[in-house]
Length: 90
Image 1: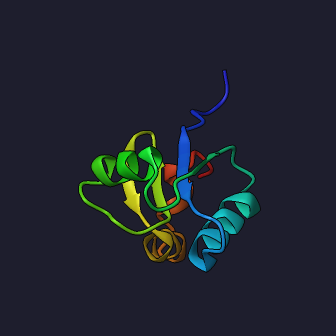
Image 2 (image 1 turned 180 degrees about the vertical axis):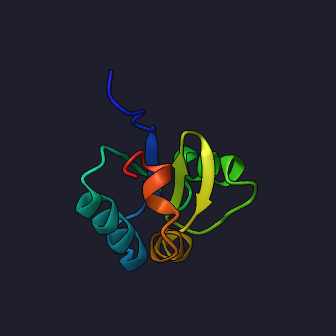
Image 3 (image 1 turned 90 degrees about the vertical axis):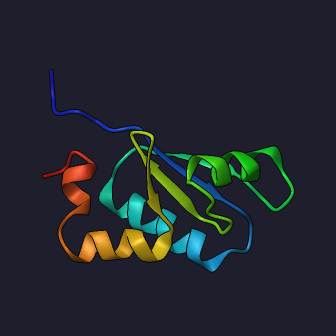
């Protein structure tokens, strides 16, 4: 049995540059993730808001059901070296 592969979910909407950037970062890491269309006014957007503790913007990123935040937080975690361990890559 290999290392734990976390469940990664990202709530996005079309034409959102931050969403595109966050998805690209995850793709570059080579991790499996689920992209959930959560455009404004959808039940998915409401789910993202509730799960994140009130985050009203996209993307909203979750690793093993833990709210990571958005693109800025994802990039900051990556820069600090804390993202790879969360993704099971370390």
